[in-house]
Length: 406
Image (cartoon, rainbow, N blue to C red; front, side, top):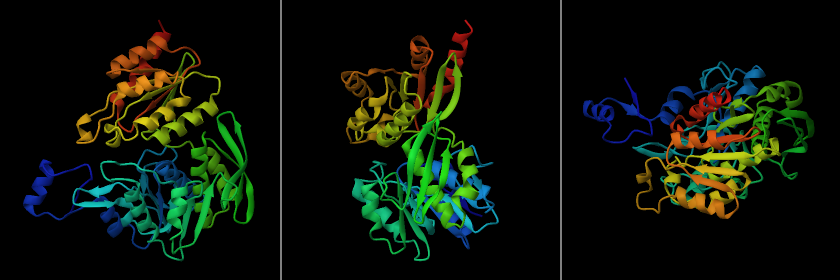
C-alpha cells in the first residue's frame, strides 16, 4: 500500500528501483508521521545540534511517569522506556526533531514536518557538512521550524547559546529560556556534584521550584534536564511533587555515557559523541565525575562530516581533557568528496604536541591490544563513535576480562 523510504536509501537501491518501476506509492518517514500519527496531537519537538535524544527520552519519561501516557519517538535506545516508540492515549507526542534531511527526494529537515506545539531548541552549531554549506544554512531551517509554533504554544530556547538567542527573537510564539546562566527563565542554582550525580535548586519563571537530583553527569545533561522539566511544567506537571522522583531515577540512553562494565578497576563507557562540542562535553562530565582517574578517549571519526577536515582543529581542544587518546581510521573516507579529508594521523600528532598521549591505530584488534597492554587499575575508557566502531567496545571488555583471569 505504501513504501516508506529512509534517508539512507538512494537511487540504485534494488528495492527502491522496484518501487519506482512498479509505480507503488512511496513517502518518507517524517511525512508519514505527520499524516498518519500526529493528527489531533500536541507535538513536543526536541531539536538542536546536541542533546536531542537524551532530552526526548527524558521528557517522555517524565510525562509517562506523571501519568500523561504520551506518545513518543526517540532516535536511540532509551533505557527508561519500554521501547523507542509508543502510541499513547494522551494528548502529547514527544518527538526527536532532526535537522538532517528526510529522503533522497525530500531534501528538507525532518523537523519541518512535525507541527510543533512546544518546541525545544537546545543549541545550534554547524554540523552535517554533507547537507549544509555553512552555519547560515542551519540557521535558516531553525528559523523555519520556530516560525511554525502557534501563539498558544511555547518555544523553549537554550539561553546559554547565542545562535539560539538570535533565532528565537523572531518567534511569533512565546519564548522561555533555559540554561545555567541566572538570566534564564529556567535555570539551576547551587549545583552540587555528589557521587556521579548532581543536585540543584530549580528556578523557574515563578521562582524556586524545589531541589532536585539528576543521576547523569555533565553540564550538558543538566541543560537537557532543565529543558525537559520546563516542557513537562508547560504540560501541567509540578516539578517538585510530580517529576522529582522520575528525574532522579532517569538512567539515560544507550551509548550516551553508557557504563559497559568495570574489570579490575578499569571502567569502560560508550558514548555517541561525534562532534567536537559533544566530545568536549562528555570528557568534561567524566573529568568532573572521576577527577583523579586517568581518562582515555577512544574516537572513531565515523560521521559524514568527520570524513572531512571541517572539525579537525576543533578536536584538538575537545580532547584536551583526556590524558590519552586513540584516533581510529575514518570509515568510508571517500565521503569527503572534493573537500580536504580528515587526517587521524595529523590529529594524533597535534594532540601529542599538546602533551596528550595520542596514537592513530589502524583497526579494532590493534586498538584492543593497545588498551589491554597499557591500561591500569583506575583508568576510565570512553569509546566515542556514532557508528558501530567495529565492536571494539565488546572486544576490549572481553580482552580485559581475560587479562584479569590470567
